[in-house]
Image (cartoon, rainbow, N blue to C red; front, side, top):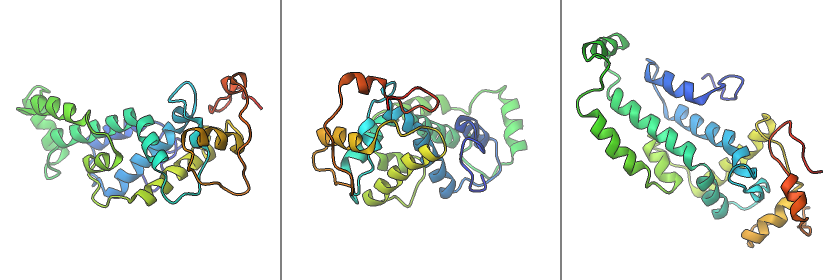
Length: 223
């Protein structure tokens, strides 16, 4: 990926995941982490907007070193993306358990089996998928994705905030709310959240204002 992970360089992460199945390139931990963080960044707009998880309070980027609220809620909002990533890694491990075989060898084996999966693969896949559905935290997701060097809660909190910034900078989403209003929303559900100078929580606007707010680019926003 040459360090490039935006939609300009990689319009569809799903296509990349499929390409990795038929690639001779080594899938490094650095690449795995890049895929995970880019998936989170692309999901930010769905996390914040009312048409998705409706968590606009997470657009307030708290100064706290560790934000349990951000860690928990981002996981909840990204659950579908995480499951797709884990399934892709699971499928890759079953379809290509070893990198020792060349693509030509894999092709020939598929032809010999008339395209059928290896013996026992379907049963293994179905049982593992059920297990993946019970995963309920990001650390387990990282392990399933083959990440050995797991980030600390402090590090991952920072990564998640940076994903929000990246989403805005790359045009995946927009700042739908002033930070002062986002802070007010955040303190309703996370009263101990740290205050970022010079912001002070303002009285929250009415439901009509919030109904018109959107974090999607190129859509009318409440000013």
